[in-house]
Image 1 (cartoon, helix red, strand yellow):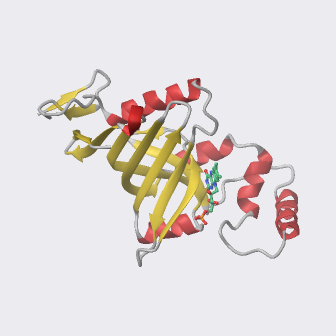
Image 2 (cartoon, helix red, strand yellow):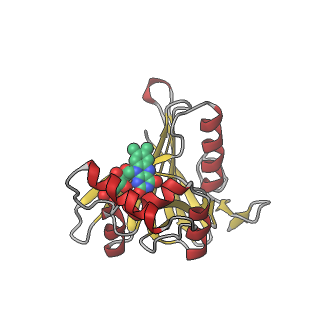
Image 3 (cartoon, helix red, strand yellow):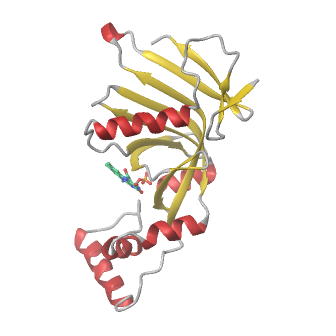
Length: 212
Ligand SMILES: Cc1cc2nc3c(=O)[nH]c(=O)nc-3n(C[C@H](O)[C@H](O)[C@H](O)COP(=O)(O)O)c2cc1C
């Protein structure tokens, strides 16, 4: 049987036999995020994103968290980058946040799809103009000869869009990561850390405590 939180979010199963927190792990994630921010953690929004291509070759890099929308973690990128190409061939991904200021790690596994175009547009509109032009100028993850080439590409886009708003390039936008597993880890004394693993179970979550 699953409970529903006051916000309507499906909660963890009430019959789990563990002493894990019986709250939606994504609500807990947001609480932890806020606490890390308050503790002054630098780059609190940076998370490692691991992908694998169609042959299973893994790759990992940091990206920035842009909000939790309808159970998905949002980030923005170039759709022709290596990560986006990996995700088109194999949508499975894993992510990890680490906040040293609060001694906490959040790991998630799940899959990635494109967010609605309207969300990408709204986000792009609020970027500063040079950053918008940069999205046109940089063919992310492709080889370029010199930094001067990049600067020249930016200048060319400045000329192209002079005196007009910069539209969002179709090769740039927002991706949405849907977690099916969330692990919340808190640093404990003598390496007796607390680990709680939440797995999607219908509309709720099954939770268990893991040995550290
Ligand atoms: C702290 C930090 C935040 C970053 N944020 C982003 C981001 O939000 N989106 C992005 O495309 N790249 C971001 N990058 C750059 C990526 O780590 C990576 O170099 C780039 O996206 C190309 O990766 P790929 O070739 O695997 O696609 C960030 C790098 C760092 C160090």
